[in-house]
Amino acid sequence: MTGDADLAALYQDRVRHWAARVRNDRRLSLADLTVTKKSPICGSALTLDVRAQGRTIQELGYRVRACTLGMASAAVVVATAPGRPVEETLAAGQRLRALLAGEDACFPPPWEALEMFMAARDFPTRHSSILLPFEALAEAFSAPTPA
Figure 1 (tube, rainbow, N blue to C red):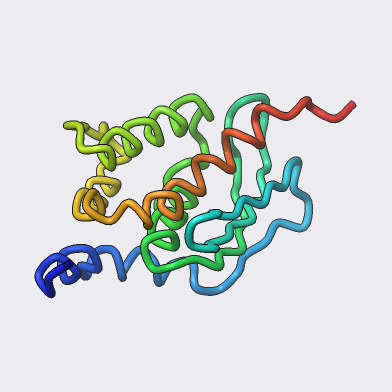
Figure 2 (figure 1 turned 120 degrees about the vertical axis):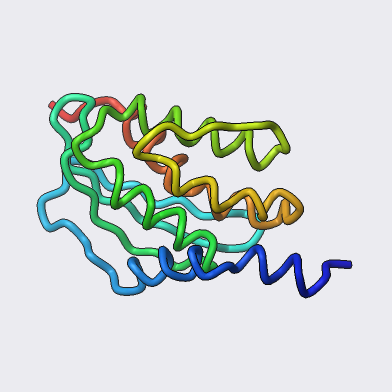
């Protein structure tokens, strides 16, 4: 059984602060790619609109219907990924996956905010929601480029 202290750590102020950044949808009208991902475990859903130049993320739009943790993760990606190569963003997602699996993971700048999910290690039912933005970007950039 999970204690109150564990839940308090899971939903710390920093997580709630990040989640608040994506409460209102901000879609892109001229997206190059749009991907919707849904967690089969909890039902969290994320739609990402991506504007890219080659494999560099230029801008992200979003519609997030997720728990506070999923919203916080999406907010970190939306704030941090633009202007960066998709490979860097996906590498941050792999570090996050390792962290959630219980491994030691170090997040280089500018991805340090992902360390806030350390408290989610003991909540595996939340992992898929937290990883949604990285899975959406992986799917978006694995799709063939339209002609």
